[in-house]
Amino acid sequence: MMKPIRIALTKGRLEKDSIAMFERLGYDCTAVREKGRRLILPIANANMEVVLAKAADVATYVENGVCDIGIVGKDTIMEMGGTFYEVADLGFGRCRFALAVSEGVDFYAGYHTRCVASKYVNVARAFFERKNMDVNFVKIEGSVELAPILGLSDAIVDIVETGVTLRENGLVVAEYITDVSARLIVNIASLKLRKAEIEPFISEIEQYLAGEDDA
Ligand SMILES: Nc1ncnc2c1ncn2[C@@H]1O[C@H](COP(=O)(O)OP(=O)(O)OP(=O)(O)O)[C@@H](O)[C@H]1O
Ligand SMILES: O=P(O)(O)OC[C@H]1O[C@H](OP(=O)(O)OP(=O)(O)O)[C@H](O)[C@@H]1O
Image (tube, rainbow, N blue to C red):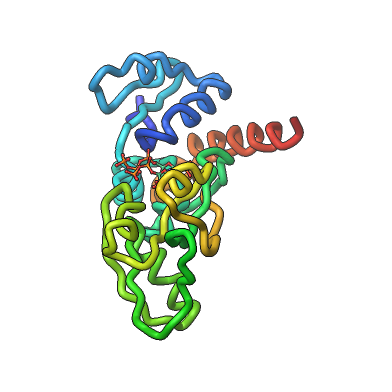
């Protein structure tokens, strides 16, 4: 038998919806649900295995072809770039990129060079380049909302979903940048070499998504 098709799933917030989607498509994810600390899990009723990885690593594994398929947020794709096919918007993991400031602050007032903190410095840089604005960036790894509160930055570029984190930390959205959701990505060589397996899989997902739209 050919080696299993490897699907890299983003651990954390996208995990539950990814598994739910596979189960609705009829894939047996028992091993994934009962994974313990294991990171590679078989799908019992298909020649597939699931790899659980951090978002950026999902993109890296798919780009390098050690995983054939991946599920990763558009935020990660925008931040990392990467060469792979982005074949579907899966409709879950919905949130938005936003520029946020402390309540009452006008980010655009005055002439000083602003400092923006973000886990997504490439996304932030591209946003201000489109505005032809000279801005300094500082990379923060998490809880980015702290940076303006502590006085390190004038603003943040981060993901906003419900807005609760901003609100509870005295920040407000100054501008929405773009919508984010989970995407299905495919390695370029895999799509050629394992077309007979991967194309029907993509079609199943597309049909499932079309069905969801009708519901
Ligand atoms: N409210 C949200 N906050 C963060 N990510 C979200 C949210 N809603 C959906 N997502 C998506 O979930 C993906 C994974 O986020 P998650 O918070 O699980 O891990 P992470 O922030 O990348 O890293 P860490 O494991 O260090 O928390 C994000 O890349 C994004 O696409
Ligand atoms: O609008 P909300 O619904 O409040 O969600 C947005 C928050 O969720 C994410 O953080 P996460 O929980 O991933 O932690 P992190 O800050 O450590 O990345 C994001 O960075 C915001 O802080």
